[in-house]
Amino acid sequence: MRQAFVHEALVEMAYDSDIGAPGAAVTVALCGHWDHPSPSSAAPHHTDAVRTEQGVRLRILFAADPDNEHPVRRRVEAALAAGQLRGADGTLTHWRLCASRSDALTFSELDHGERLTRS
Image 1 (cartoon, rainbow, N blue to C red):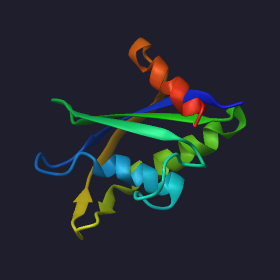
Image 2 (tube, rainbow, N blue to C red; image 1 turned 90 degrees about the vertical axis):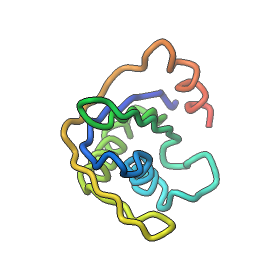
Image 3 (cartoon, rainbow, N blue to C red; image 1 turned 45 degrees about the vertical axis):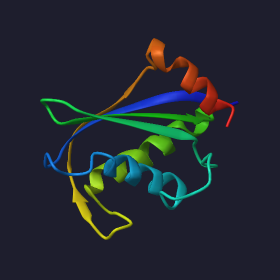
Image 4 (cartoon, rainbow, N blue to C red; image 1 turned 135 degrees about the horizontal axis):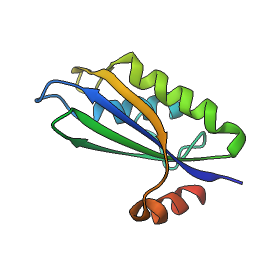
């Protein structure tokens, strides 16, 4: 039975860069392409990106069977560590992974996590 998990990361990127690019890279790693019908069969997920003074903070919520948690995390980590993604318009966005860790869902994420587990 699927459970909801969180992977949090901090990336450094140019201020005028697309902060959605790292999340799109995660989607490519989990689904093969960022433009796919929902939900992802490998691991339904959602990425929230917020620019902070330290960089861009990413919170990736995903649902997976407990046995698949670590393989999904490794794919997320590899996508973020790659540090780049070419968008649909051909623009290449770069970032540098500064930190990454597993985290627990916050109270405000519980409903979304539950929806992902039912996807």
